[in-house]
Length: 436
Image (cartoon, rainbow, N blue to C red; front, side, top):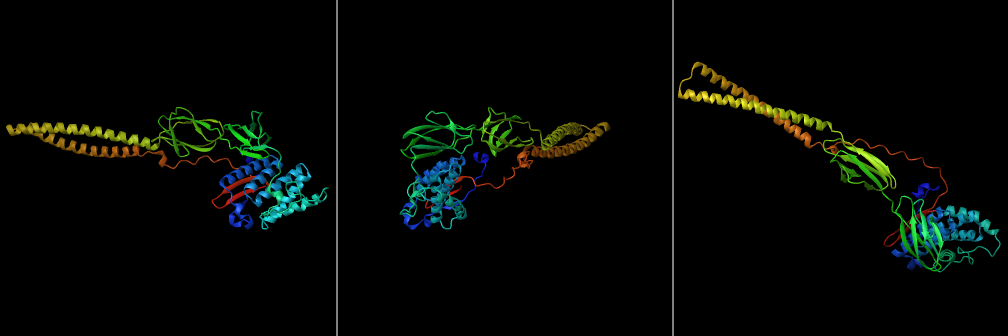
């Protein structure tokens, strides 16, 4: 993210713009339409990008354009901060006077402003500098005549930014974004491009992101902003391993191994799981960047439960085989006993035949009892083995903790506040938050 590379972090400050708090004289015109709110947000985002890039003059104009659409004392304060920075980097009477006028207007419109002390401190350092300037006295925020309150209670200088020709203000939140207008060479964003009124072809690109092309219609004498959010190019993940295993990314099933092609994943942190019944769960947390190619090998080992299941099933199968053998022997002795019994019924048996008959009956009973015991044991073993086999789901076992993410770097020491912005709009109110 671009904000991570900037020397100053963004701090957020809510500034309520509810209609209930609007001055009564301006109530009729205070309600922004959705189109106005969207345009104000575009100006605000573009102004924040220009502020971060050190283009303070352009940032101030963008904040005042946003104020025109969605009036807010906080936007006046942001514009004043930008003009003050502009004066400190490129001293000019115009920037100094406009900063002073906007700070005063901010304090007048919001006497209980959250950043009142900062505004007063800024005035205490800027007003003595203004007194040393040659000229007719303090100027309005637009650099023209001395500031005067308008009908709506807003100084004329704060109501409209100065006109500096027809321009495009092109910005993007992506670090390293570059912009081209009408086929010209790409230059770093944000870009303020003087153009002729009419339609212009704009291209925005950045490493690891899809290029965006759009048409922007420039209005004569206006600053037209476009804040372009680029779509990141995905990383490509290829997973190899045990055939038939399911691949799950961030809790969603994505494929079955082996995959036919690499899988696109968004840049960032993802949890990859590969599972197959009877195999140990593979789980890994990965961090991927734009267009990165990542390869994982998930060769799943057999679980101890599956090994136990095969062992018990083997014992059950052996028991079933033994049951069959014992039952066959018992049937053979039964057949022998039946044959001797039939002969006894027809004729009398010799003493040796009677002994054989009694031995056959006794052996039949012993073998039958043994077959029943073996059959019961084999049934229990097969049932237990089958249960172990069917309910061997690695997902039901707590997975080992994922590798800890690298610790966050220590917070930098406090610095001067940077620029940040966000605008929200409700049915009856609108909100802008930012800090400059």
